[in-house]
Amino acid sequence: MTRRATNKTLQILDAAEKGRYGVLAAIAYNVEHITAFVRAAENRKSPLIIQLFPSALTQTPSLVHAAAAAARAASVPISLHLDHAQDYDQIKEIADTLPFDSIMVDMSHYEKEENLERTASLREYCHARGISTEAETGRIEGGEDGIMDTGDLEGILTSPEDVEDFIRAGVDYLAPSVGNLHGDYGPKGPQPDMDRLRGIFKALNGRARLVLHGTNDFSPELSKACIEAGVSKFNVNKLVLDPWYDYIRANINKPITQVIDEGIEVLIQSMERWMDIMGSSGKPSKGEHT
Image 1: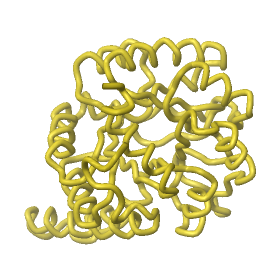
Image 2 (image 1 turned 180 degrees about the vertical axis):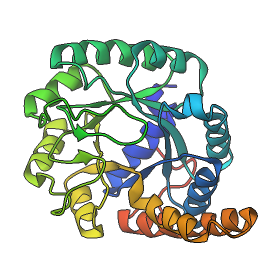
Image 3 (image 1 turned 180 degrees about the horizontal axis):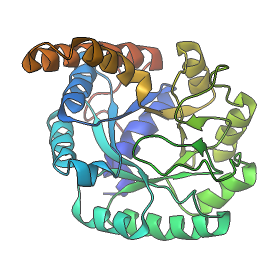
Image 4 (image 1 turned 90 degrees about the horizontal axis):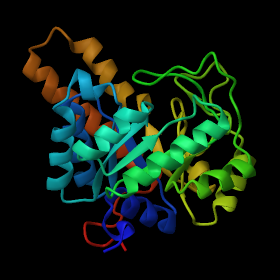
């Protein structure tokens, strides 16, 4: 069978683009997050992508296996993605040894030509092992927990030429720079260039799926507009985790088992709300992807 027929992230996002809905690609920092993500996906009959940062592989190395096991056991399509992998040699080792369905080969901290060269090489290495790949076109400003801060580098908006370059590099998913930021936005909030986003989707012409990073503080209306513009994968962190953080801060003095149980329920509700907003609730179940 072909990689497209067997790779879970490809199946999930191919169906999302065809169905014009968004899929949450949610960062997990602990087992409670994974539990809540999967329960919400099953409650809403929604596809889901669980994401880990490379930092998790050293801080909590068992987390990747817990996430992979949860994805395999789920009654809905769930894949496991490594977000912002930025170490060339580490990516190759991960592709050889860990059960990721997809990896973001993030070479955006290099200048364009080296970015493309390294991306193409790592894409080939991952594809040979059945792993699909994501790359960042242009350069998204800012930083967040677990990834390299690009604050000392100039943000570069994605151009049509960038799209063609990364399509030639063979990646499966493109994360463009359209005025979005890693981390928190200022008082004006997120203001992505929607015309640029629509133009990038048009330029992709079905050859790769469109990914949006930097979704902190996005409103439901803006998220839906981005889906209309062609985005199928939404990387989310604080957007879904903030209610959980708020609950933990306010209830830390309660018995730990109560905090865990109630915190999971808070996060389930947050995830379910955003699955409804993204339009992924009730979408293809296992075996229905083509």
